[in-house]
Image (tube, rainbow, N blue to C red):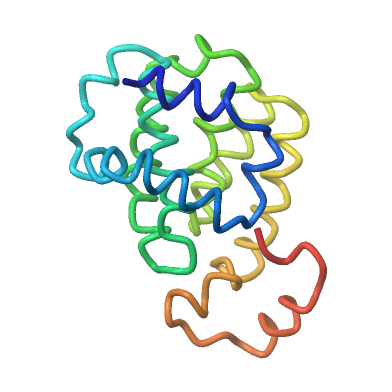
Amino acid sequence: MPQAVLSFWFDDIQPARWWKVDPGFDALIRSRFGALHEQAGRCELFGWRATPAGRLAEVIALDQFARHIHRGSPLAFAADPLALALAQEAVAAGADLALPMARRAFLYMPYMHSESASIHAAGEALMRERAEKGTHDFELRHKAIVDRFGRYPHRNAILGRASTPEELEFLKQPGSSF
């Protein structure tokens, strides 16, 4: 089953779809992987952690699929702590180094999605040393936002948080939302 996740994410779809808001693509992931995402959230996929590829597939199910399945809802971020813990365990075990560099970015993505400055400090060093330059550059952009605001302002409305005037000004800038 991990291979189904990896084949879909890396072989069956074009990378441009990863980052694009597309209700049809969100619906496809929801129908195809919604139940699997729920299993991952209940830690029922623990057997996948026996291999680096399985660990990556579980993190994708928790991190990337959540953002498509639950777009516009607080549930889009609900599995982030679990995805981060799994990514941290994978890194500590060296499982990330067994993955092709281009795929590692998705194992490291929970570091980018964190709203913790200390997690971003660890993630920045990790991605500088173990990821492609583009992944590290993207982490630097994420880290700068969390360092400045202590959170991602673009999540405020979804999470029911009040935005500060400075955050509202920031959100008017291109590239302020991921």
